[in-house]
Length: 142
Image (cartoon, rainbow, N blue to C red; front, side, top):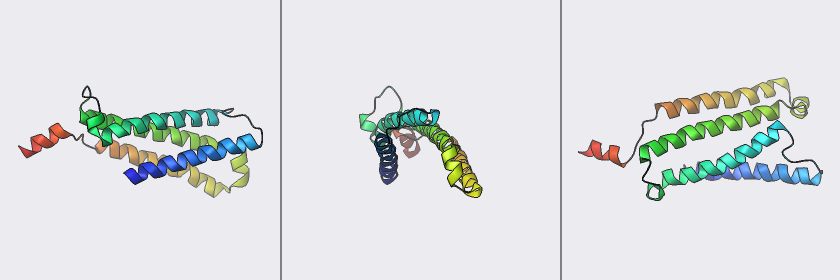
C-alpha cells in the first residue's frame, strides 16, 4: 500500500507540475475552465485524504475520538469519493475539443469506460470490506 501511495502522489504532482509549467510557458491562465478548477480541488482533496491516510497507517497518531475501524472505513469511502472526482476530471479532459481532435474514437471510448469500470470495482471493494481494528481483533482472540 505504501508503494501505491508513493506512485499516486508522484504521478499526480508530476502531472500538476507539467500542466503548471506548460501554462506558464505559453502564458495561459490557470484554473480557467471547470476541468482545471475541479483538478485544483482534486489536488487539495488528495492532500487532505493523504493526511487522513497517515492516521489509518499509524493508528497511534490518530485521535481516540473516532474508533479505528470507523476511521478506516471513512478513509475508504473518502478515497472512493476522491476517485470519483478524479474520474470527473478525466472525463472533463477527454471531452475537450483538443483531445477529441487528436485521439481516435475507439481510444476515446476506452478512456471514458476504463475509469468508470474501475470506480465501480473500487466502490464494491469498499462496501464489502469489514471494519477492522484493535477492539475487533481482541474479540476474535478471546
